[in-house]
Length: 143
Image (cartoon, rainbow, N blue to C red):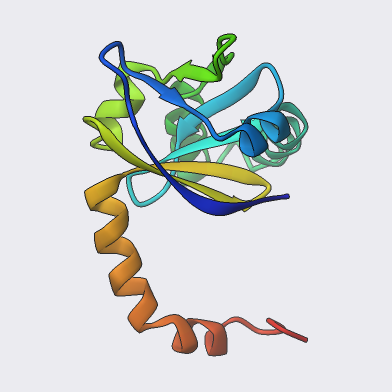
């Protein structure tokens, strides 16, 4: 399980140093793809394979299922950290997530998320105001 919040900057070559704890959990290789709210999702292979199977099982005859699968898989890339724990995030994913230099890396249960620092700070501030209300809307949370 992934958890925690880490702040790191991309180096001049667009590489991101992943915290050791997260890097170990992701394994090699792992998959990066478009996340929601303009972040990048990182999945270890077992999580990716389970998610891929669920998406593959969506009804092919529904346009929204096809559209989601296209966008999700078209943005995916296999990643391998180098010997120093740095990973090159593909330029298209950096552009999608508006990542220029400063990032926030989050452990979110079965995946890791990479955000542009300014985007995360805005999102977190807004979500924090609604934290209790969000919990109330999610049935079974905390039971």
